[in-house]
Amino acid sequence: MSQTTLIAVVEDDPEIRSLVAGLLTREGFEVAPCSGGVELDRLLERRRVDLVVLDLMMPGEDGLSICRRLRAGPSETPVLMVTAKGDDIDRVVGLEIGADDYLPKPFNPRELVARVRAILRRTRQANRPPPAPSEVYGFSGWRLDSGSRELTDPGGQRVELTAGEFDLLMVLLAHPRRVLNRDQLLDWTRGRSAVPFDRAVDVQLSRLRRKLGDDPKAPDMIRTVRGGGYLFSPQVVRI
Image 1: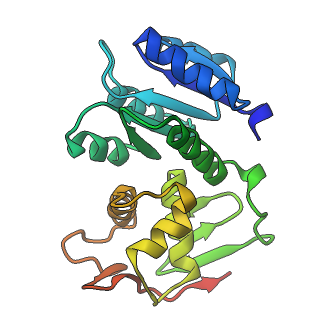
Image 2: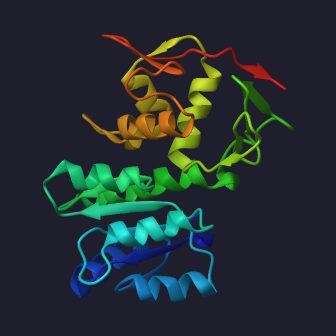
């Protein structure tokens, strides 16, 4: 995986940028250091980038704005948001606008590498067990093709999913009408990169509910089971 993987490190601090780039290079990845959004845009015009390690706080265009632009366009490049802020709201906002994961500064270098590898495992089809041919799931008028990762609503309109949202939906479709606790969802969607009190799965659940048209105040499709976890209520069929 690492020999053909290009990671963009977007960080305005040259010392931190060099340290992160050096760390990932020693792990065998190809790394493209970028001082900001302009250099990242130029890189994306020339190369396919497998992952963006994106600093939140930067002068000029900050990480939230860059992530929002990436998600507004056709790019499906996964994003690991790195933030020095102590307020969780910034991390939540980053996940809300499409970041696949976040990592607070200061971070343990081994944790950075573990999260990078976990995101790449989740997002690179070459490293996934191949789905069964034409594995298509239907539920409440919705349709998900596990091979192409294409989700369409009852009206036939395509709905874009981040890698984390797709993984979460696949877990729910594989275990319909069964209560899944938070630890199970963390294990199945984030694996060994999950940490105690990890909130990413909560944010992704909230985001997935909105994309499925589930009322956040009284969700009917992804139900919250008090003291138990979550239950995917629709009948799921394989088409």
